[in-house]
Amino acid sequence: MFRMKSMRSFMFLICPVMVLVFFYYSSGRLQLRNSVQKSQADLDSLLSVGRVVASVYDKQGFLLKLDKKLPLELQYKYGNISKGECKQGYAQAKMTLIYPKFSKPAPMFLDPNYKRLSKISSYLPPFGVRTQERIIDNILTATRSYSLGSELDSISCKKCIIIGNGGILFNKSLGTKIDQYDVVVRLNEAPVAGFEKDVGSKTTMRITYPEGAIQRAERYEKSSLFVLSAFKANDFKWLRHMVYKDRLWRMDGFWKSVARTVPRAPQDMRILNPYFIQEASFRLIGLPHNNGLMGRGNIPTLGTVAITMALHNCDEVAVAGFGYDMNTPHAPLHYYEKLRMSAIKESWTHNISREKEFLRKLVKAGVIEDLTHGI
Ligand SMILES: *[C@@H]1O[C@H](CO)[C@@H](O)[C@H](O)[C@H]1NC(C)=O
Ligand SMILES: *[C@@H]1O[C@H](CO)[C@@H](O)[C@H](O)[C@H]1NC(C)=O
Ligand SMILES: *[C@@H]1O[C@H](CO)[C@@H](O)[C@H](O)[C@H]1NC(C)=O
Image 1 (cartoon, rainbow, N blue to C red):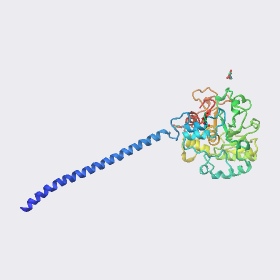
Image 2: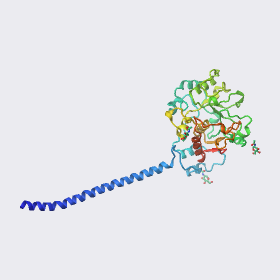
Image 3: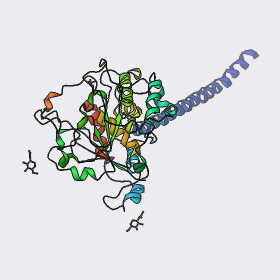
Image 4: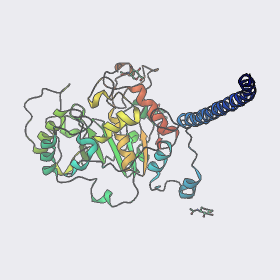
């Protein structure tokens, strides 16, 4: 009897305790869930911040909102420089602004210490020098010159212009303006003689690959650097022949006939740093990496390679004669011949439209100036 009573009172006692425990426990869970919810909310807001950050830049890492306006710190630096005067570091500063991954140091040409350039040592041509070291060493031993030359090396601010071969240059009378640049870069066989009014008469360097090189010695200008941009292993071998003036007997391995001699002394020959092909393709344009090998649509055109070189090595960069307009098939393809736009087919190696997107960013942000407005 006594037991029953104590049991009942025990139950009376225990029930409220259990209720309390239940409340305590569930409120704890509630709190727990609250805090889980809270941290989830934190995470969400973090993610959305992440999303905002991500959406400021495009897939390649370029600012999405591009305009020519200078931010305050650059206004202060460049705002007072009178028109026409060279703005030191300008191209790099603007490039870094729209593409923070940009890192300037990348020499124009290979020199005997090129093996220090780790980015090119692990890639095969055209993106690097792997397997070609012996031939390159051999070439560089003979050329013994690895820069623009003492006169240009000594100026502290260089304005460069890359002359594309586009028909858009025709009859624009830009020759005088072009000649005012410190460094005038021409590509492949683009002629000067007879076209001076439109394309100028100065040539600092001519960047070519074997199939694009001028074949008749008399068509070369009196002096300019002859710069090889190698797209395949055979191209280095070809340059070695040109440097040593060995007659080139076998012509296989090229996709069209190539020059058999180049009327330049070895000291006027250079090898363009292949890093510019690599960077333009994989980083700036975002073409397929293809395990670092040449593949469908992953080779930038020579013009874009030259512009990439200039971004790293010039204080100001301008271009003229760039831009194909696929919508006007009857426009001339080149300023110097009658070939029409319709003659170029969608190419296997290049991706012209992707490349144009990249060049448009540079023009839109004022990193480069496009004198013929074709980009
Ligand atoms: C630019 O010019 C303004 C007015 O002429 C002057 O106040 C300013 O200090 C100058 N800035 C630089 C960087 O020289
Ligand atoms: C070149 O431009 C001038 C005007 O600047 C024009 O008179 C002339 O007809 C043009 N020539 C050709 C071949 O288009
Ligand atoms: C060029 O790039 C676009 C978009 O990435 C792709 O759809 C197209 O197939 C590419 N063209 C070539 C020739 O690789």
